[in-house]
Length: 245
Image 1 (cartoon, one colour):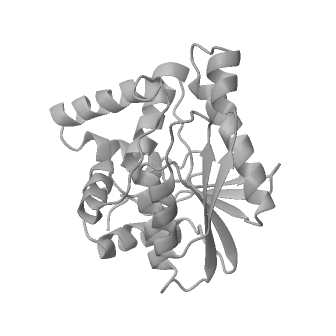
Image 2 (spheres, helix red, strand yellow):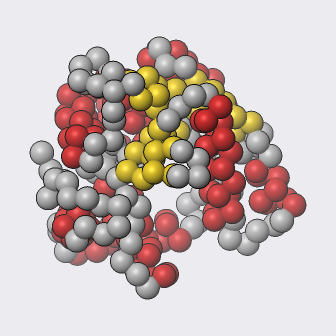
């Protein structure tokens, strides 16, 4: 996948779900992984020709694992001419050392989002962009079905009334395989997560399950995504019917 196709996928999602308005100041959550770096690159590219003018600010929540080197991410943001903030926290100590959580992901995510949202407001941003792609949408739906017994996934655009912030997900129509190909082609400085729970979670289980289902039933992921879009669940206004260009 080349940059122009990335911009096309991203703009289609933004337009379908009215994600960006004139004058928006958008924070982009940067984990250091492939998805968030791709999102940052895509939004920077769109700034040049999108009809609504907007600003970007990249931000990373440092959980405090002490082995996270963000120097390459800093350089990446400098090359894109995007301001970059690193928010230092002690979340890792609280979750793993103090509380010794056996299932740390839920508490970690809650604390990380809380710290991130407060910092975003301090920076004057009114929106936060997350790098969730099509695979994430379907995986979350499967997790909800398997572990909660309900048909649910996160929405393309969500207003957080308590924080007066809007969450947007511009990579909604991107396949994870396309993101991987794009990052490898352009040699993005991906930073591996230092979290000890990485790769050993319910999401990882569902990710592998979806891969197996799609291998045995080619196209099943696309059909699941279409079902999500067409069923208009909470937070999913009618957008592009099939998520394709």
